[in-house]
Image (tube, rainbow, N blue to C red; front, side, top):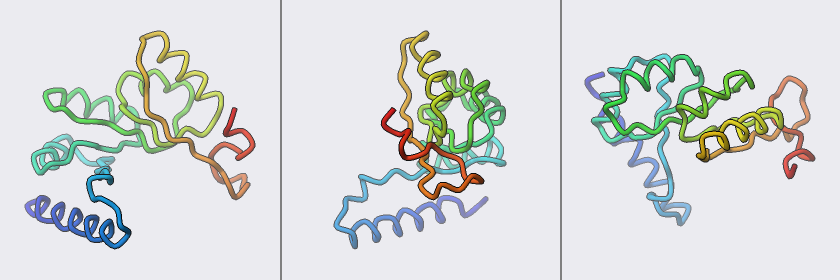
Length: 144
């Protein structure tokens, strides 16, 4: 990936242009580099180019990369569906979960986070279409 830094600068420029057009500060936007299927060396290259947040959807892959990259101050975001039995990995490794899609998972995460005295930033996935093939909480469940 010899042109990674150049491509990253291009993307950041596009983000800045879009922010200016929307009357928004570019600093209010966080770029999440999705590193799924990429090796730890690619993450190191992205980190060297200035990326700090990385998204993973496979928790075993996240576990392995987090271990290999423990010398860096990488922030991890889980971006895919999480089974309740994988909540311990999310709690141990992630700084953020972008795909909370069930009350059962919320309860399990809450229990595990309380046990170790930490918090986790969470984005709730809402199924506004009502399609059974789509994940997410029913809009009526969100406030609960």
